[in-house]
Image (cartoon, rainbow, N blue to C red; front, side, top):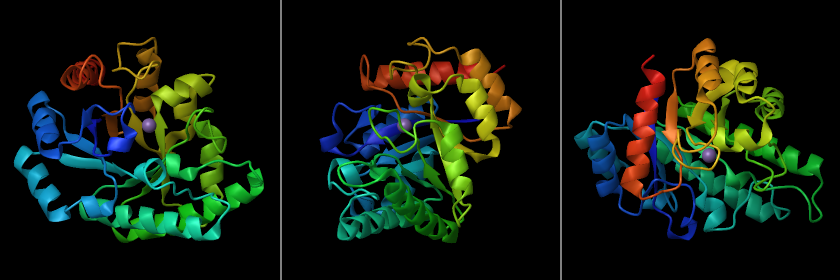
Length: 271
Ligand SMILES: [Mn+2]
């Protein structure tokens, strides 16, 4: 398994669970010094990512790009894949497509999290799932051209009412016409929603494409009350070799949260 740490470049997301903020170059330097394998970046949009410059920066620090988030599509631009307005849904697909292309050029998958939206306010669950499924299929085919999957992240009940658990999300993904969508399993969301995190990971098996490494309180692993022993056993059982990406609050500060995450990563991956 490989280590990654999150970097947000979106001022509107302030207060969110990202370790580093605002300055990509300084964040990459910290990440490299602490020994991370990769960074996961949340840009305000694809136009904020100069792919050649980012690739050069990562290369200079010996870092990989673990994934690129699309959350700014919702947080900053109010674009959702399940918006009742067809024009907004189309814009949402366009926004995510551009990020998929930028991520693809960096050899990384893009993440669909908060851009999935929710049902209600005149939109039925079936309608929302129809739109979500179609959008994921279109976006997954685009990702496939870059030889990377699309990552879909089930969120906890306070953030979406579409899919809150890995099992139901995996069944939905199996029903899509593109099979190039993998699950992003976020241990914080899972600690709220799953009966047993380890069992949920085992059941999702080969669909697990990425993991957000966060404790029950969104702090670094080891600083909440999630029991990591059965979780790591489950990840080894399903032969997970992807990233454990620290998507945690910058508590008590960014560098400390990153250092704590790296200490926990080392503790749990060197058996
Ligand atoms: Mn997450």
